[in-house]
Image (tube, helix red, strand yellow):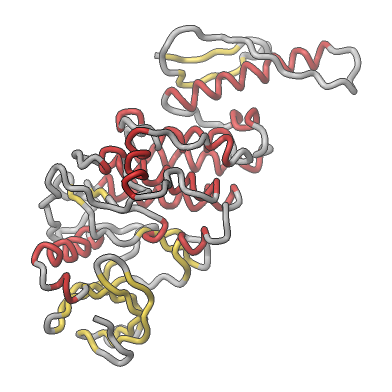
Length: 367
């Protein structure tokens, strides 16, 4: 059902269409009570007649309205006018991330800033027990001032009772039955593509796919058909991001690789940690050259756990060897190429590594 300008839904006067999605259409509207413009999402007539789809639509409003964060679109109201069901939400003056990506790969600084903001919004939702389950560039708005805002929690799933971070508004607790595949092909996690139970780490995989696309200018998983794409997500590895986006910092590549692990246990134990790692890379971007892998180890914060820190330790070893060679050379104009010297020989997680005062010894903690 397409609404024309001047149509009224409760206190909202429709002004112009903004777009459409799988469950409904979005319009720019005027809130006559507060004198402000809002975005109004209207459930498609065919969906409104379906009790389950209508429930999911209302679940979107209740799930999102329980969250209050600068990187999540604010839900103002939910209502109905006759057979029309709608949600009134914050109007973001900007473009979808998909539209932003039409221009190709993003500059490193911009992709780190947007990635960190998206991760922050997800961390807030995950702390409240809510999983998005349909995170994709179309569901991220980028405002004109560069702020990222997640929208469309239509497939959200409540994992636990609301915490102190949420309001007292009721949240739909019914979840999708095992074996049902929901979401968008190309950004699903392996467990989601397989119809298996999932949790917040599924959103981390989706974010990893988005970060990959922001850096490389193309999707991590895209094949000729949807079935082939699903198979690739479940069984195959994407082209190494070091090859498809060689200019991004090594720690960023490690973050993406970790998010895209097939086994959820190999991803982040907390989405707050994921957001923190992205912020750390962004904070230290100006201190070093982003074109070399060695520059990435100068972060003041240790990388946790394992993968980031072990990689950082290897680069530390390269830097140490290169420094010693550079000091001993008799002819400064000559380039002393770094050499690699392995320091650790057992499996485990390196939590931190630092040079000792003598400039030659490296002290590290491990488990």
